[in-house]
Amino acid sequence: GTLELIDTQSDLFNVAEKSRQSYESTATLYTRMAQATKNLNIPQEQLLRTTETINKALVVSGASASESSSTLLQLSQALASGVLRGEEFNSIAENGAEVLNILGKSLGKTTGELRKMATEGQLTTEVVLKALADGAEDVDKKFQSMNLTVAQATQSFDNNIGLLIKRASDGTGVMSNLATSIKWFGEALVIADEYWFGDETLAAERARIQLDDDWYYINKRNAGLIQETNKTILPTSI
Image 1 (spheres, rainbow, N blue to C red):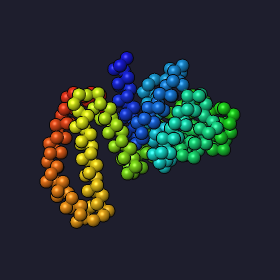
Image 2: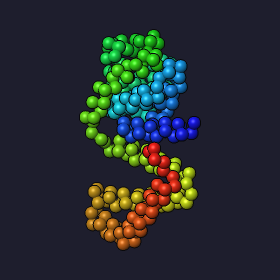
Image 3: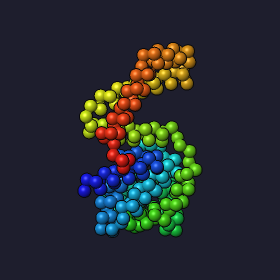
């Protein structure tokens, strides 16, 4: 039902945030895995855990945001088709070395042997998912040692602003306030850029003018926006 869908979306958002990946790519991967395994009676919690493991494995592999997004798409297509091989396997080999490490450790195979298995259609969705479940804890440990990057922090910002915009668009009288606040936030970033990487004197003068004209109003209006959003839009599940 509707409440179950909202809970799943909330869980997927949390998975994306915990694993520093795009919410959209995470949701696509989960949805295709769920469709591909509907006859295997795999619990939702296990599918969510596997999604998290794949996301984290790509971070451990050192894949960029764009590489991760592309690889998640390829992997989701492979799992939906029932077997990992061909172009999808090559994408994993290129950007998701840790995923291959997990498969190799679970199956007792080298990368070359895994490639042969892929060619022969032996890396089925069931085989891949079992291997990922076997390697989940090991990936968690490696992931915890990975420092948060600027790109990953930006991805988290994108996830959160996308969620806020979606919810605000469902509300009344909130969207214009949100748009104005985002515009002002962008102007604040210009000041920060000038201060850190450009002319500190110019940045200080711009900040003084901005403070005189806008900052008090921005803080006051944003506080009101947050209160309004919490009361009228945001569910307690996220």
